[in-house]
Amino acid sequence: MKERTYVSTAAIRSEFSAAMSAMYRDEVPAYGTLMALVARVNDETLAADPHLKGRLEATDSLERISEERHGAIRLGTPDELSMMRRVFAIMGMYPVGYYDLSTAGVPVHSTAFRPVGDAALKRNPFRVFTSLLRLDLIADETLRDEAAKVLAARKIFTDHAIELVGKAERDGGLDAADAKAFVHEVLETFRWHDKAIVSADMYRRLHDAHRLIADVVSFRGPHINHLTPRTLDIDRVQALMPAEGIAPKAVVEGPPTRNCPILLRQTSFKALEEPVSFIGEDGTWKAGSHTARFGEIEQRGIALTPKGRALYDRLLNDTRAIARPAADGSNAAAYEAALAKVFQAFPDDWNAIRKEGLGYFAYSLTDKGRAARASGRNLGEDIEALIAAGHVQFDPIVYEDFLPVSAAGIFQSNLGDEATQEFAASPNQVMFERDLGVAVLDEFAHYAGIEKASMEECLGAASMADAAE
Ligand code: OOG
Ligand code: NI
Image (tube, rainbow, N blue to C red; front, side):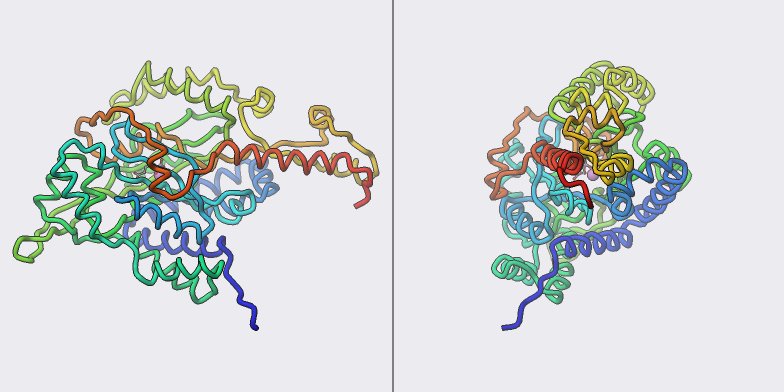
């Protein structure tokens, strides 16, 4: 029997990410402008910092950066979420982390689908921040029922996409022709539709309950609402955006500017008001508009340990107790000053971060360490001694996930400036995981695993009895 050859999940993910980027650039030209700006700033940053360039090259991370992006979608029902999980699994993307946005006045909870494991991330780290609408947080029972009815009737996946998912699950993969069709069919789910599936009146009522509810319920599918390229210098891109005709939000979300970047910093530009039409009583279309799609950039830093993350969360809270960024940007300077001051308590030196157990690192032999090994010396297994002797180096492991306070800030900046709604904090990870169909993965365990594997490999290489290569 002829052996079937399947396309790797990573190759399908790369194809899909590229197809999505092309589609969004077509639909939202400002995204193309932002991509060009980010590419330019990344080139300039690398030219000015040969050490950074060298380390990115040595850790196989340089190539992925220009290709790197994340997107976001908002789903309406548990069925949509569990099917989306099966779709992403075919691209090697799994749900990592649980984000409760209800505390921030956004009636959703979320996870991020992304590749896990060092090799898959280096190949292509495409991620999708995926939210599920929480109708249970809508007070108006009639509206809640109407919305649920509209959502139950829509089909966000094409029949062929669903068939191909079943086939991939049964056979353990897709061949080249099926993989190509899969990318094409799944892309349809993320496409923008300018014809709503509700009337103007219903849209208005949904919108009045919460703008996000109108965005999720009123359309045929969960249009991709932004795609975010990764920059090596977010402050520089933020400063250059206005000259490109793009107005960024007032403050960058996340930690302040630092020598040693931690976690994730993000900024976005406001969602565009776009023409849509609503179903009229008599079957005619009624013109209107909808605001959902925006642009964002991000800079990624080191993944923090639970101890480092607790320190980050505490410092962010302390900052926000001094100044909470206003939607209109009026206190941006005061907020940034408070952020910089409070975060002085977070060490800004890689070795200090490492020694205090605040961040995750990948360990490897230096050239000097390799030369010593080649001459047959056993360098021992004392990691601190190896580092002190210059035989071992450590590189920060990149944070691949998201931050709930930042995500809320990004959501809010796109929900308009009307007073934000308050929901009682009601994280419900159990319900989310039931709807998803699996438990979400623990981000910390994942980074710890990458660190541990690098440490074992490095110590093994430093101390093997047989040094001959
Ligand atoms: C998602 C907002 C969160 C991020 O980068 O934190 C997000 C949304 O608006 O649907 O994308
Ligand atoms: Ni985003």
